[in-house]
Length: 398
Image 1 (cartoon, rainbow, N blue to C red):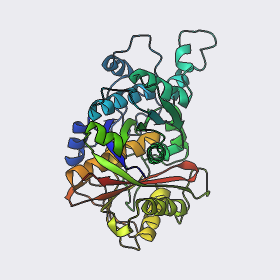
Image 2: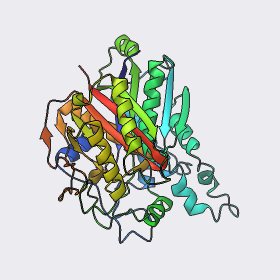
Image 3: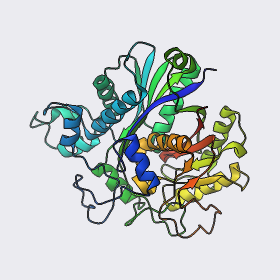
Image 4: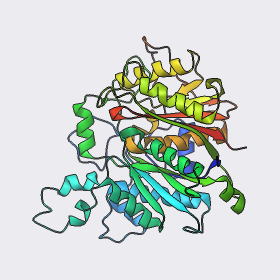
């Protein structure tokens, strides 16, 4: 099997517009949870969000787009992050090899269509936005923006979407189908998702507290992040610097409920187990778990139980980074893959903010302060609605 190297990464979230800004926020415990400035929701005074403090017009200006561009916010964030990833990898020969792009999104162009769906039949003024509602259109916009002409596809499996994009990209490199592939995800805040999560009664009215006994729910966030994956042969050909390796991945479905995880976390358990099997390492080799950790009563209980099962009640250090960014839905697996790589590069475990009281039913106690540790392997979990459970193992570059 070909080795799957990460040679570049790009990110934008509420805690940073660059890799450097993001890392600084993580190590200084600077979160990005606040009231919304741009989303006109009836919940803006009672809920907090991981909102990126750039308007659509400001994002378009940074990207050099004309005033009449057709890009929804999800596409704007994706273009920004993928451009950063290409730059970070030092790629100047786009389309010179067998390339691809696997994009993950769940919101798609919803942030603009929800504004104009009642009026577009009477006026063509905003038709360009309505036409880009579909998730696949977002992928095409981003690919066209960076000039990619190779294979493209879209994955939408709720909150595990970006992790599944990374997994599929790694599998395609291992199978020799592509030499280089861009993988990750993007999602913007929208009234539809805010109202939907509020209806499910899993939005907190404060700051999210993963794995805390008194957790009340999540803060929704928005973000985009992409990794550049390359085959070992291409890395050697171009003397590319390797940031990390994707060594294991697993996907499973517990087929339990549309939105809830099973109480035993069966899908979570199977995904982590498959990732370990793919990486050909034992549970003891994992040095840190970047948990899905949404701070909802159901998720943290389910994930906690499955982690204890995989690691025979003796897990390594664990933390959720969602108190920094909020839950960014389809982008979560992408930004947390970036966080995991930063953890390996700098040999640090990022803190689980806002944790006070351990859960009574599950003996999981996350790290609450920045911790130095020698690490080789990080397990990153992304578990989504519909039982879509995915785990990645990211390993240190030698």
